[in-house]
Amino acid sequence: MLARLLISTAATAVLLANNIQSQPTPAPNPGAVIEAFHLYDIHRRQRSLDDYSGKKAFAIVFVGTECPLANLYLPRLAKLHEEFGEKEIQFLAINSNPQDSFVRFSAHAQEREVPFPVLKDFDQKIAKSLGASRTPEVFLLDSNRTIRYHGRIDDQYTVTHRRVQAGREDLRIAIEELLDSKPVTVAETTATGCLIRFTESPRIVNKVTYSSDIAEILQRRCQECHRPGQVAPFSLLTYEKARGWAETIHEVVLEQRMPPWHADSDFGAFSNERRLTHQERETLLAWIEQGCPEGDKSEIPPAKEFPVSWTIGTPDRIIQMPITETVPADGVVPYRYYDVDPGFTEDVWIQSAEAMPGNRKVVHHVIAYIVEPGKKIFTKEGEAAILVGWAPGDMPAIFPNGVARRIAAGSKLRFEVHYTPNGKETTDRSQIGIIFAKEEPKREVHTNILWNRQIQIPPNTASHSEKASYTFPADAQILSFMPHMHWRGLRAHYSVKYPDGRKERILSVPDYDFNWQSVYRFAKPFPVSQGSTVSVVGYWDNSSDNPANPDPSRTVPWGEQTWDEMLNGWVEFVFDHEDQAKQREVAKVE
Image (cartoon, rainbow, N blue to C red; front, side, top):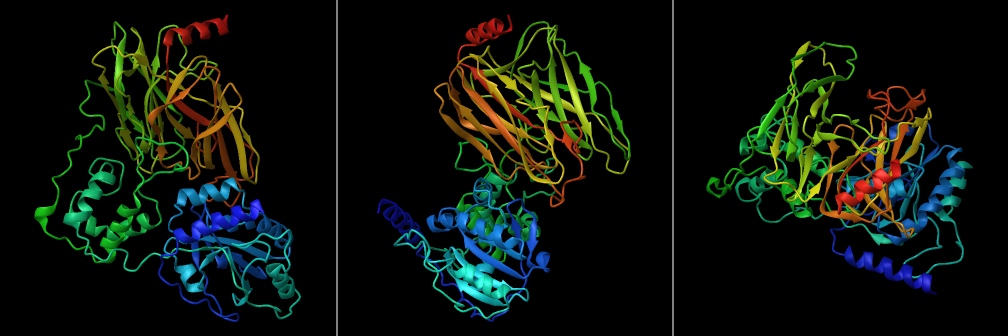
């Protein structure tokens, strides 16, 4: 009785939340032929019905991340997939809910290990064309894409009841009859579940203009990168530029590719989050769909002031590589290392630092290490003497008040630069900028690389995971994380296990993107007690289905070049009491 009440209450809540919607197109009758469609899956790989042209049938089910009934039926669908997959029945799930972000949709499918493709219907075209209105709701198509069955999966779960077992397994029976070349006995049933909320058309009734609505959004969310000299490929500083790229903006905003942010909002709050709000997203899309009106130029807000070149502001000191490096037109360039003596005769404290590539076209990454006399850059516990790094993404080291990085007297700085030739011989001279703390800080920043150099990723494996951990010797506060993998990287997550045995996930990156190396900075430092263990788990796709995979036939080890792999779970933190931490580290070594 309690289970039935929980299902009914939860499902009803979702239904009520979604009951204001435009009406979908009525579902085509059985016998209608469906056109092939293209959608992105949970790893942003495009899938089409044409990809499965040799299949005998397609079972297409609409799902949602928060719908209790859809979630109850996922294990049932997995079993049906396992049973009928060998008989050439292709299962596909489609998420058309606008409230389910791409990152949440991707995380949901991966966490529940859905064994068949799950696709995102960003503009709801597929749901509308099929007339789908609920989750879960299934359409069974034959090899000619003719609808043979439409409705529920079975009658075990509904909004109002939960049977011990199904009275009639409608989808199973329809599949068996189709495979036996028989007419489907019951070709249509009523699906029950959560309503799909359809986006209103038009999105926004009032006129949206660049001057009064769009300029401010672009300033806040886009121009940090979309301006001359920065990582983005074009500028968005003016109306003319924004209008010229309107179609591209519409596509990447609709598909939630931009602004780039790959963390699941269910875990952690981060100060540098770039995610658009729902209102911002709808306003941008509406402006483009209305034809990009400019509006009254006098309403354009004053231009946002950005640093001319340095994100951190004008550095107190700029330190360059000691030479100008020649990068060949092709081939593999081993990592280059250059030591520079900054001439520090006493300890200095760094409030912020930034690495700047001299030639972004060929620089894959830059890392500046601190080479302190008598000490190694990496300890066996993984602590890393790193000042700052750069890769396409969000990499400057910017510390809160009272927190800074120490460079000991007599230390040198070591540039590590990875070059990727682009077909033309060229040169580079990268540099770093630093801003000194105005006074000695209360806390010193520490970095642990949290790496696993023993990873071995088996060949032809679609999902393989490895783990790395670090135990805090004293009470501490975590400032940021940065997961790092290479071409085969799929997703990563961080968890903490406390001394009392409790476990907590504190960051999930289900949509990992090697081309955008993001640092996730906590809005408030995350406290961990002495003896707590932070772990990072990384997942890789070493199968031929991964378009970025250079060779699915090899076992992939840890390695510096991108055709090998890494599991580096960079974590920045401060100890609450530095002296206690050092005493415990010394005692552990002795």
